[in-house]
Image (cartoon, one colour):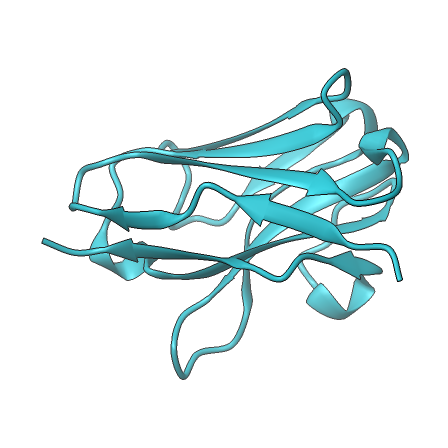
Length: 123
């Protein structure tokens, strides 16, 4: 089973920053759209941001626009999520996921997932 590996989560104070990384275990990312999702306790998983194959399209949830930046470095086979001006409501487990070519905000359409990394925003 092909998987993704997330890293970079942690505890940060409100207003702080974190950068999450997403790297595949056994395949290259350049043919895939990569989405970042998050899930807070008791809540459904929601899309945070997505970058399509070849950076053709980038999308953000309304709640993360102007604060989060998604990018991909195909030379390092890694996708990043830079999170700035973090708020307590950004707390949750963050997952990256891959699907062929195009972004979607529907998590069942993604084929490969990571195990998640915890982000906690608290003073």
